[in-house]
Image (cartoon, rainbow, N blue to C red; front, side):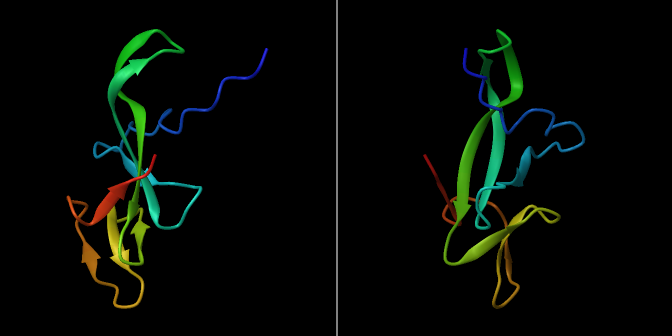
Length: 88
C-alpha cells in the first residue's frame, strides 16, 4: 500500500490565522489553506485544502510579512488579486 501524500496544510493554521505560508517547493510561491473536506480523516475542516499560488512579476513570498515582495526594490505588495496567480 502506498503512503498517503503529506498535506502541506497539516498543523499550519494553529497560530497562523491567515493560513498563508511559504511553498517549500518554490521561492516565488506560497500556499493558502482553505476550508474543505479532509478525505483521509473523513472530516470537514476549516484549514485543510492547500491552494498553491505564486507571486508575479519576479517577486518572492516573504513568510514573516505574508506578502509578495519585489526582491530588487523591496517593495511589498499585499496578497490581493492581480499580484499572484493560482498554480495547479
